[in-house]
Amino acid sequence: MSMCVFQKKLEPYFSEENIDLFLGDSFEILESMAPERIDTIFADPPYFLSNGGFSCSGGKMVNVNKGEWDSIESFEAKHDFNKKWIKLCKKVLKPNGTIWICGTLHNIYSVGTALEESGFKIINNITWQKTNPPPNLACRCFTHSTETILWAKKNNEKARHFFDYELMKSLNSGKQMKDVWTGSLTKPSEKKFGKHPTQKPLYLLERILLASTKNGDLVLDPFCGSCTTGVACKKLNRRFIGIDNNSEYLSISRERIKSVCPEFLVTG
Image (cartoon, rainbow, N blue to C red; front, side, top):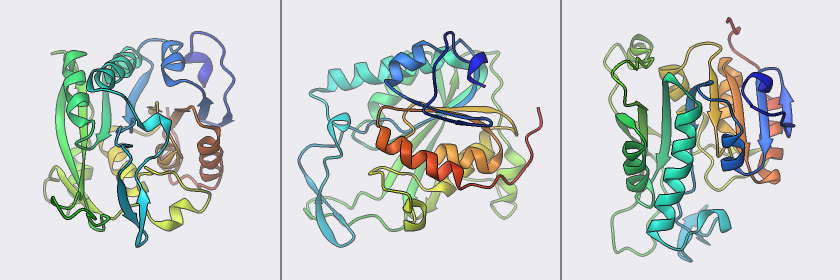
């Protein structure tokens, strides 16, 4: 699959039919990709919230620091980072393709601005409301219980993005689906091969893919982590390219993907 996507040969960290995982710098790998090959992008970039603070996990106080990849020295550096990867994603996205990006107050305003600066038009601002968020230990503000997911397309009058309106309506008891999605944090059963600090629940990625992709579409995740996007793609028979710079997380990704049984046949 990667032969028709990359401008030079890259050896994947893991590969099976319709799925390739690459270990390395996301910027370098994105730059090596051919233009307009990707149908849909899902990105869960660093939120840059590692500031030495504390949160609650499993009833215990834990440090919020996730690693060097989640810290940055200034707003300007954060915004430059977001503009750079978003522009690279725009290059590889097909004219009618769309991009989904997760974030919190720590990064989402920069992401939204970078999208518009890079020539994207935001379609929806999804609010993911968590039913079981960790408590606020400081007790000096409201409990953080939501994340934002921006859905955008290229800002071009000819762009015609795909949206499976009827399916979303059928999944919502015959009513138009709203832009507030409610559900739990990632289940422990989805972390049986190992833990990633910002792993998204499978139901969230399944809804995103069912809403905006067709059977056999090619999906890219430039910060794939433990690869919930890849798991959802294999389950729903979408083709997938995942990139991450951490071999430990890609090892978890490999085992998760190998354990999945597809639900539908790929056609086209």
